Length: 268
Image 1 (cartoon, rainbow, N blue to C red):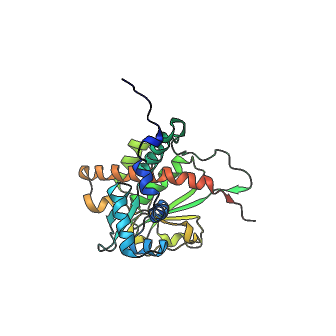
Image 2 (cartoon, helix red, strand yellow):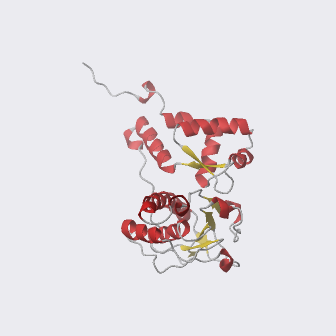
Image 3 (cartoon, rainbow, N blue to C red):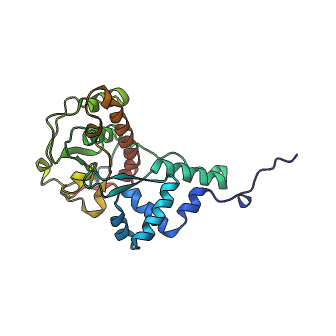
């Protein structure tokens, strides 16, 4: 019996390529790679009718590349999110299907350890409502993954009295990061500062968060459910914080290369 290697021309194109090759689906993937969006926002950004955009979003959701979550600001809306991990695997598998040497390497995570003298640290602000769980988790993980080479802070529109105990515990146990001494702060305390990226992690705060000079390309939304609102506190809430920290950490791993690729020039 002959067990010859199947030539790429004899096999069907990988599913990821078949989906991503469509021009409109590629535009949707590109938009969602930068931020979570609602359908009406995607309609505006790609310039196509809503029924057509919704149809192609359903195809992307069916393949697991895109997920949707109800907005915590308006339950009639949903935010669409691109699963970058699944896309990375899809691209790697597609390259490997064409030739084993074309399988992509994992996404790089660390920033260079010695910035040049002509560059400044990129400034990133994470915002949510209470600044007690999601945004301090994101702040701590980005600082940890970049070895302090990003000027990162977090704040809330309605800060709570203290950092949630489960957030402190999860970061300490799973990431070796201690935020027990951190305190929530109000967004108003940062007025006058400029950030290269303003990343909202809460659907509610997205509606009220100032731009802080980030401009359109620097405004990013991550629609992440509030673990304190759905599970309460104590042992029953701990798994929700584990899931929240894991999702934030995944998103941060894909944010870091963007910070590396766009070094900030020192303002004279």
